[in-house]
Amino acid sequence: MSLPPTTPTDDERARWHLGGLLTVRATAAGTNGMVGLVEERALRGYATPPHVHRREDETLYVLSGEIEYAVDGVAGTVGAGESAFLPRHRPHTFRVVSDEAHFILAITPAGFESFFARVSPPAATAGIPGAERAGLTDPQEMAGQAGRLGCRIFASGPETPAELREVLEPGTEPARLDRAYHLLEELVCASPDPAGLPAALAAGLVTAARRANESTVHARALLLLGVLAERTGNDMGGRIGSLLGLAQPDSPEPVGLALVYLFAHFPDQAPAIEQAFAPLALADADRHRLRRCLKRPDLESRGPLDTLGRVWPSPAVWSATDAGRDRQWRDALHLDGPAVSALWEAETAALLAFLGARAEHSITRSADVRS
Image (cartoon, rainbow, N blue to C red; front, side):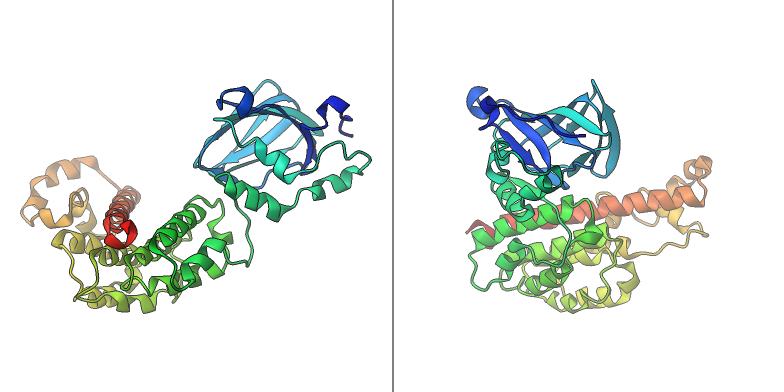
């Protein structure tokens, strides 16, 4: 199999991209910024790296061949006459699984189509063997140019993300710090393979978090460590133990709430957490939310069933007498152990989300971030 030759009229618009041949058919300039159209022809094995757009959606329409795609880890396959929607803010990738494929990529709104001219050489570079065409697109250049256009390309490896280097640099102004943390949030939250994130990330975030009482912008490092714990199954080892010392009577509210969100993920350390957080100035409702997240229920007893449904707005508002009022209808549900466990986990996840949102709101309102 081979890709078709290009014609002279296509010289400026046609590119060798990741080994495939693409031609930009419509640009922002010609569509009043509404849509960019890219026509592509590629052989089996052509694949885009996992990436996420902040600004644009992509729609893949297959003219011939077959393409596998994944959005947020959910995979699908499209063939001739079918389309796949690849939305912004959700990591996605696709690859050609037939001998060859011919397809259209619609970019809405337009603008990102300029990326291809920035990273891949003109197809007029004829005579290059097919096996070498994929190497014409440099991965580091792709990542850099995509970032400038609001798109993150994910790649696993030992390298330290540039944004992490920025938050660790002494004297970085709060506005720059905040922007760097938002980019790190994108990396951590949208990565299709959280276990494959750079090993230096967690260690760097712990280092940055130790500065939270000095500047509340760094409380975002605590939030990110909590998200990492959630996405990697709480596999944080002993990395965060030293952060318990941040819980001080004079800790700013954003730091206290971010600490609650982070450590609410670790019920195995509940006694140490409650002891360390005793001097922390927390609203009763938040302290009760933390205690509820740190509970390890005995699913063989009736206890968990009696407390389900009592986490909102906080477990603190439900009294002991309330627990007996609806026992009859709860018994009528005939919930077995797995059902009770699933409901318990769902309510815990809701509490964690609420705690994270409270901390995020408090950090955003802090003087450090707004300065």
